[in-house]
Image 1 (tube, each protein chain N blue to C red):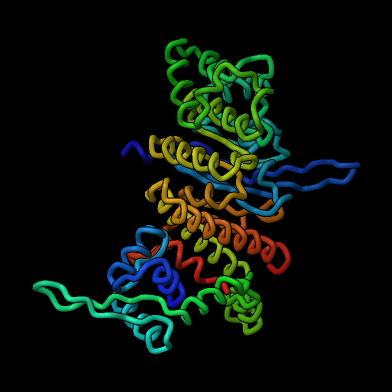
Image 2 (image 1 turned 90 degrees about the vertical axis):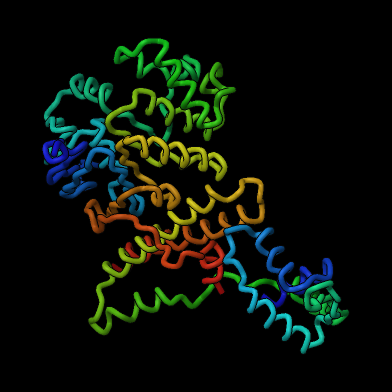
Length: 251
Length: 168
């Protein structure tokens, strides 16, 4: 079977990050071993300061590791220089930042198309993909707007569309629903579920249990270490069970 | 279920099966479908307490059906129900009791308890997300009931995280 020889989408070996703040070493990530298979959807949870964001930033080459290894689709990535990392990211990784990082002087449409154009997609293909993604996220009417004209929630959805424009091997995201109300979160949940069913590998940091509930697997960090790593399975035991069961637990 | 049935009867008289259908229609799949036997038992008790009364309505070719209606006392009970505050967040929580007490006896590890509970909550959340997606978007009561359950679960998970930070 080819599955045996397919390298993991992502792999870390004893990954460590220590920040030097005011001369004192502050360990943020302390020896993380993580393997993500192609097509897997992994949610990373844990309290603030547990190292979640640092971990996912290192996976995307946006923060350097202190020690340990990072492998992207079988290629050692932690030893790459900045420009080589940038190239790898452009080719293989889509990243959704907590604070969007959209290009201000470009329209929403151009922001979303840019990553595909940069790796040589045809303008027609880039435009079709952009139409699809903005449509799924309820943003078709905003294609010609500038990012600054959008609400925080809209900018966050544009950032997700941009990250998916390329159909990257791996989608990395840091709190992709952090600025969304519940209606907009529904659109994001639907899109994440859909691209995941199409085979998209996803690793995202989230506090939002609705997002984590969609994942195949949840990794929990505490003080920079993995304290739990396991599948999310349907809790349903009886065929007829509804929200009422959960609500009735109260009181 | 007493007061839900009473509220429906205060709107209009109905027989048992109509009440079952009304509950299903209002709350959709979000609420466990009431069992018809349970509805008749509850109606019997409400009648015994004087909160509803029933009349037999003749039907051609079929046995008579009992149509229930709300009495003045029933309306009074309903007003009381609506006026009193509804139970707030719980103070007793069975999981928390386990978390605090079980490790004292040496039969469980707090980290393992918390991790298992988190996975369980996330599994429930997964079911709720699916339920919301297959429930009619225009059924506001059903969607809001599901959203409420999700918010409760999110709070439970946040609290679990606090427990893990402080106790484990």
